[in-house]
Image (cartoon, rainbow, N blue to C red; front, side):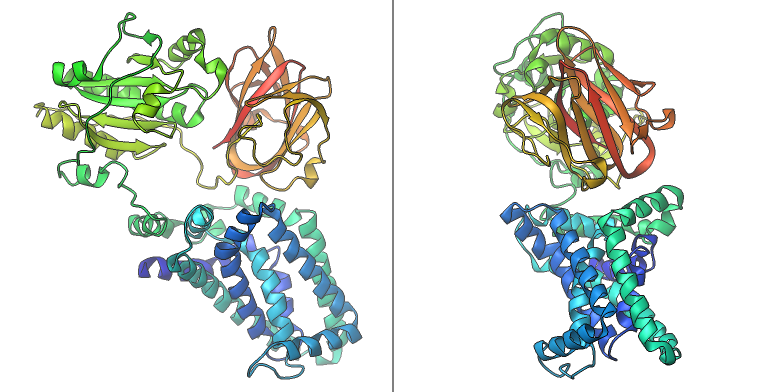
Length: 579
């Protein structure tokens, strides 16, 4: 924890000098340059306090009340604009300064010293500053609402804010010395600063600061955009962060034990395949876990997946490589296809997906989630490694941890008697970009999230805001749509989907009634260029000729963008994912 706090302090200092802060830096410095002598201290204390509150405690409040995430940003923009207007009216500025100094208790309560107004202004700037947090702190923030509040989360956020505050305080003092030489133009300086604050608020309201940040993130080297990126990849820091989140990076499946050559833990006897339908790649023969393990002495890797899940698809290169490398050594991989959507239950669709993805190991349909539930599973993808005695010895949820999973496979194969294993596999898997911010969402009412106008079952007309007015991670339908629990189907010629996202890649599960349909895609209000088009786009158009996952956008790097989809009548959307 101490290591993580020290890093947070350094990361905060680095962030204060990073391009992310440039759009609001003039307002921060202006706040400290104008007003009484203690205003810089007030600004920094207010910024540190509000930043810490916004990144930890306020997450709980926003989540509990069901308020939009953009509310914090709009509060900050409003406060910044109001302070700018105050500075533009000298009499009003004097009145606010006097009122603020009376409100603030303690030694800082000195009339006209600027501490009180600085505290209030710094508080608003802390809310603006929060999105600039680096990936380590972002990891703490994103899990805050889902877990109990802890002193560790608060300490890391405070250390990050303090690091930024110290750098900004030094910059404000330097600016203040410069401003002291311009005393003869004090009134004009104050008016200029007020105009600067109002201008900054207006630019932020138009989200030009976010576009600027995206542009520099796309064009500048990574070490300039995030000066602490090298340190963030440290294993020690990753372990500390995992601990702070309430877990251990390797705890899910004993990967640390495998890496260290220690015997893997025993989680209990594995259940058998239950309530299944068709088997593929077995000649139609049903398999059983007891027969594979105690009967044939094999190590079994169960992979729960579904063919429209991008997270599942990205793990397939390693699964196929392990099957190829270790099948003769006694590894049996079985894919358990546990569908999310009704059309994924169709055996023909599953068979085509198996062929399209080049899967040669056995796959069984689990349409009613019987085997999924028997394992107590809740995730796609999920891997359960079973030893030759039929016991679950390793579990991993989601993507990644491929090296640890392979070490566990080799450990159990060696335990089963194969002491002459070859080299580890050389596979490459597509990974989600670390700058990813937009979560997946669904177009059916059962799991829809992030929609500007709530989705309702039945046919009705929707009206979308303009792309410029969509906050990040917001989605909107336009035109007439028919919505049910798991999908939305276009029912008018002007049907469209608009969204604002931050990612590198965009995926959408689509289907079409009565033959192929089309979806026309524009990015940031312009035809999508070939350099940014996903593999399912041709001249900016997706031809929907099957119920599957379609790759719409594939950018050179992650960034903030707006996407618009014009959808033919009869085309249905199921789920967006980002990577």
